[in-house]
Length: 372
Image (cartoon, rainbow, N blue to C red; front, side):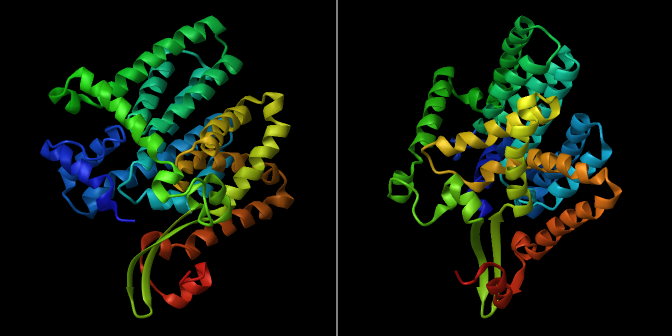
C-alpha cells in the first residue's frame, strides 16, 4: 500500500498547476491533501495530518450524531469507544487517502439531516446540502446518501411532502454548486464542454473496472477480497512494506469483526424489530446503512473493503444502542465492559499491522498465518 502511487501525485499536481493525474475522482479530497502539503511540506506530516484531523473530527461527529439520535450520553460514548478501536478506521485515518474525508463530510451531512428532520429549517437544510456536496466532491459514492435522506424526510419530518420536495430541489442545486466549485482550478483553464466530457470519462473509467478487465476473469475467484462477499469471508488484504531475515513490516486492511459481524447481525435484528415499526432513530441508521452497503453487492466493477468505511460509524452507533439495553440493567453492565474490552484487545493485537512496525515473523505466523 504505497500512498505515493495514489493521491499524493495528484496533490502535487495541484500545487504545481499541472493536470490532475487522478482524473477518475473529484478534486476536493486531493485539494485538501494539497493544502496539507503546502503548509507542512512533502513529508509524512504534510501527507497525513489532515487525514488524522478528519479521523478525529469524524469521531467527534459520531458522538454528536449518536447523542442526537439517542438522547443518551452512554450510547454516544459506547459508539465512540467502539469506532475508536476499529482497525480499518484507524488505518485510513492515518493514510493520505480520500476515504476519511468522504466519511467526515458524510457524517456532517447525516448530522444536519437528523437536525432537519427534528426541526425543519433552512439553516439545517443548507448545512446538509453543503456537507453532502463536499462529500460528493470527494467521491461520487456519497450520492448513495441522497435516496435515504429524501425517504427519511418524507417519513419523519414535520413538513408537508410538497414542501419537502421543493426543499429537495433547492438542496440538490446547492449540492451541484458545491461539487462544481471544487473544479474551479480545472475550469480556469478548460471549457465547460471539456468539463462535461470529463464526467463521461469518469463514468467510463469506473465502468471499465470489471473483474474481467482488471483480473482477466468474469467473476471473483479464490481471492474474494475484491468482492463484498469476501469482506466477510476473507477479512482483509495484507501488504508487505519491509522484510529482512526474521523481521517483517506489514499493513493489513481489515474491519474489526466485533464491528463488522456485530453490526451486521444487529442490522438484520433491528430491521425486524424496530425499522418495520418506524422507530425514527433506528430507521435513520438502518435506512442509511441499506443504501451505503447493499448497492455494492450489485455492481459489476471491482470493489474494495474500504468502501464500507462510511458505514462503520453507523454500525458502531447501532451496536451502542444494543449495548445500552444491557447497560440499563446494573447486573449486566459487565457484559458491556466485556464487549468493549474484547473490541479494544483485538485492535491492540493487530496494531503492529496497522502502523507497519517491524515484528518477528513468528508473531505474524500466529496472527495471520504468515507467510500465506
